[in-house]
Length: 520
Image 1 (spheres, rainbow, N blue to C red):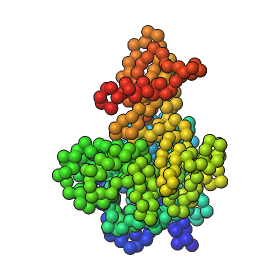
Image 2 (cartoon, rainbow, N blue to C red; image 1 turned 120 degrees about the vertical axis):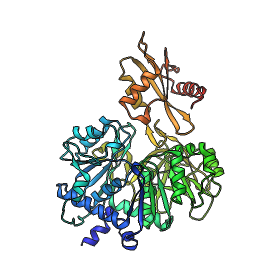
Image 3 (cartoon, rainbow, N blue to C red; image 1 turned 60 degrees about the horizontal axis):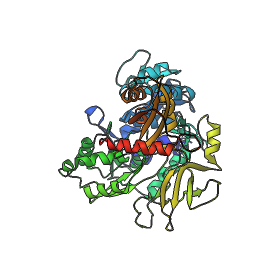
Image 4 (cartoon, one colour; image 1 turned 90 degrees about the horizontal axis):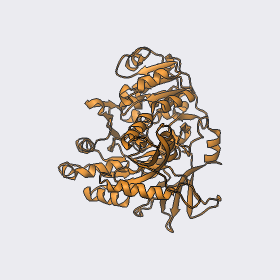
């Protein structure tokens, strides 16, 4: 029975690789400036130790455990190891504001949190203020915390893989909905295991492949795009603690990486180092994928010119829906501006505002990957999931050859370097400042991030508040990625004929003013 339970548990998804290549290096971890290497056997043993530790500390199957951990091997160990014990890990966005993270941990009723103090300036305070039974800390000793490494070495009975029911939840990543408030997507063991096998069936990785991960591990771009495919195939990957363009290029060359993926900003930034790039031997590199944000055809052209022997492609995907658009398996070339055609075995629809099938409209996805729902969010679940169809909120059109092209969002959310930004959320934040009377936030073009937020603000009469004051306020009170990069303080906001704020006029004015600064 243990073998059946292992096969149904995402925590054991790379068992075949452990059996086949136990001593092969799986991860080269660059955290802290010190290279650490972990073989498949070592990784498997550490995940088993996590499962044993959690069981010994009283975490039971079905309980949730929070993870506030940066890019390091311990993230991988804790993430999959906790699933081996039947727990449900919450990989938290380390860029969120402290109060948001505390709210997530409390609402999810987490039994435990594992925190990496280097991942968030308030990591320890967040855990201390959260209603948890146990708190684990990496790298140091802290009052009221258990040491992660010390607890990992204490004797613990082997944990038998728990029974996994059909559509049982595996983990709970957080994404943002139409309100901008993070919501937990309930991803299933069954769906995730289907997806890793599906990827290998149609777009196989080889044992000789080596990926490079420079984006946060809590993002689908890293876990779904590199970590799981590489471990499942018996390949390897290099794990960087954070992205820095020259260090990224150095890692590609030094470790003979064959593949990497990232948001547009990754590639825009390293293109500023073309001279340095030309000094490196990137002969092993075969493929780069750009996604998670606006990707312009000009960017893909520029990367291909800089790396003429490397295949560069655009991707589209969602945390709760997978990557439903891919290059055709018949070998047809994907046109510029398109992430591809409908992927095999995944059902897609485009619907208009009335819910009718159309050639341009909101994209709906149905596949085993799609999340089971949103934790403690029945209304959002009903709105987003209909008979297994996930409403993406993204507007696409489809040409006569079946290629899809992104048009816009159903709502006004936009992506800033891979992070979802909601104008209303930032407006509400600005409204909370005692000197602000009114505010409108819109996206403005940015060469690295694709789009960034900008704000037009009406201040209280006689106020001496400055745009820099308001930027600092937003950085202090909200997520760093969503702070307005440009703030224009005006006497009045433009209105349309109906007397309502003219958002198009605001967007045009802010885009023009931001562009004139010359540092966009």
